[in-house]
Length: 148
Image (cartoon, rainbow, N blue to C red; front, side, top):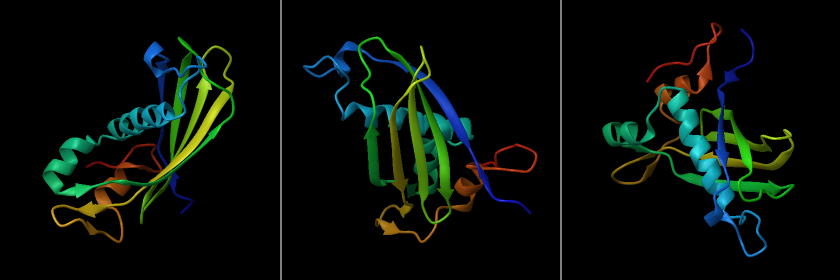
């Protein structure tokens, strides 16, 4: 049995005018919005609608830690690709993000987020994420994602 392989997924977005700061580059806080869109796209790609899953299961997945490394700025109308890669999916969910300009494939930003599993109501911190979520974020030997 080899190492665990986790899912990854890419989405392409473009920079709207309202995401710019006075210097005409993307305001640093908007990168978290791009990461969030990519996170939800990854879960959907893996067959998990987080909103529906949370509503029916009572498990929430709050973000507990984030980090970002800004390398080059994005500007108005830049097309860019956000690649999301699962790094861990057992005790917590750890996702790595990489943003590249679509025109030249240059990396502009890297980031990471960590999420835990919380049972609602009651906000009870779980010691691991639900097995069906772990399975969905894991790639089997046949290349398939687990199911929820």
